[in-house]
Image 1 (cartoon, rainbow, N blue to C red):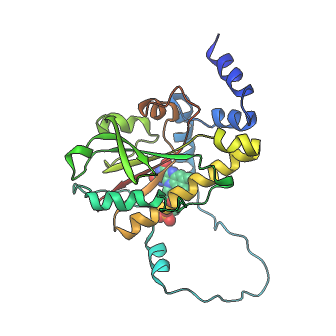
Image 2: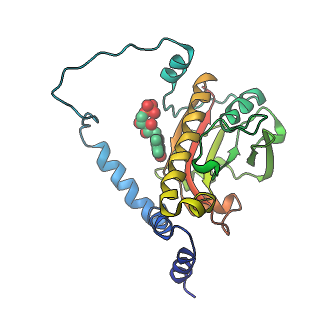
Length: 250
Ligand SMILES: Cc1cc2nc3c(=O)[nH]c(=O)nc-3n(C[C@H](O)[C@H](O)[C@H](O)COP(=O)(O)O)c2cc1C
């Protein structure tokens, strides 16, 4: 059976075949990556427009909050330069706390139908703890613990899986990986939306922890899906790579 036929068969068996089809079509690989890099370059040459709606009504002014949460939210920004300082175990725990679960099993993140389709993996390069350095990790949400899966490739090798290539080596690269059947079994095609929305929650929560820790980081959407999934050992599963997040010391 050809690769395309295999994919079509797989898609037809699923609860949300159109979402799966959209997903296959939006993957980045060596071919689509070139097109994406060209689009990004063309976009950079354009004069940015103000991305908001403008109404000819009176603007009713709002009061700005001055609390601690507001301060952290204001500190969140995409920073792409990382220093050579290692990431401490305290900082690592603080970052993964973004996705954690309380004693009563309530999570810090909302999820449609409580199905929690997103799993968090990470690759490390510059950790204070030798046991966690240059490893591929899985976040065990039930225990707020890390499973060490295997050794990680060097950053120069890994960065070829990103288009356009990211420059600075982060201390850690997070991956939000969806297992869409958990959600689509209940919600069918609409579940596809929910899965993507939820990946965004994970990224936002993480970005606030990054700001709180005075670290640098940014969301990374342009990663080669299947290469990363293989690296994580997920190539034979229904896993979808939603988003990556590069994080490091300043
Ligand atoms: C879904 C998503 C994907 C993104 N992908 C990338 C990326 O591949 N590379 C990158 O440098 N920044 C990426 N960003 C970061 C945006 O460029 C950044 O959020 C935007 O410029 C606004 O800046 P700010 O985050 O500092 O407010 C991404 C952001 C989002 C939400």
